[in-house]
Amino acid sequence: MISIAIIEDDESSATGLRDMILRYEKEKGQTFDITRYKNGWDFLNQYKRTFDIVFMDIEMPYINGMETAKRLREMDDAVCLIFVTNMMSYAINGYEVGAQDFMLKPVEYFNLSLKLDKAIRGVRKHRTGDIVIPYEDGIKRLLIDDILYVEVVKHNVLYYSDREVYRVRSSMTNAEKALSEYPFAKCNSCYLVHLKYVDKVADNFVYVGEHKLQISRAKKKEFIDRLTEYLGGRR
Image (cartoon, rainbow, N blue to C red):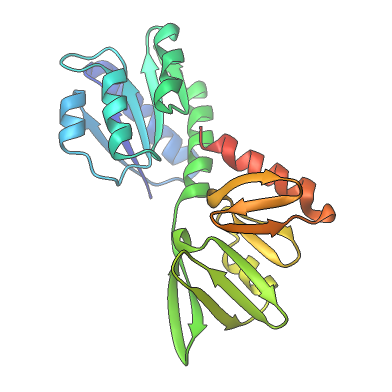
């Protein structure tokens, strides 16, 4: 299920947007949980980090959408934000608060459908989860967000986190399969890197926190392409 917030003071606009989202839900086989707020104050005061996508009107009473978005980013820098506005000039300023996109009123279904396609791809790409690995005569549950990168050494797979390295008897093929839904990419045959934690790429090395990993010639283009795609989806 994907959780959506609509922040819109105009009743007709809010209803119209909700109806189009429900149409998309039916046509695309999605499942949405939609919550509507009439103003930015209510949204901020009740905000929890549970929303995946936020549709925000810019012209609202009490506190406008731009100021609401600035305060939202202090609480959550990852949620997908899409502005809905009458004025394109307002929407352009939205990139200052990490808005992924904008829609001009009156919203048309075809345009909404394209924006939702893109937003949902981003949500799925960055949504965290966990995997279960065999560990010390039992099992260990690892949060995806705790994994910096994976290394294969002979018949062992090492999962690196900030706190510890977890060694299991397995293969890179198994690790890739377990992490296939998440933003990981191989920089060479030995390393599977969590793209979220890439600090920089330089001189055929990728830097992940304090770790410096070699990028092979064979994997370089594919790795850079995957990283570029990932970073583009976060806007």
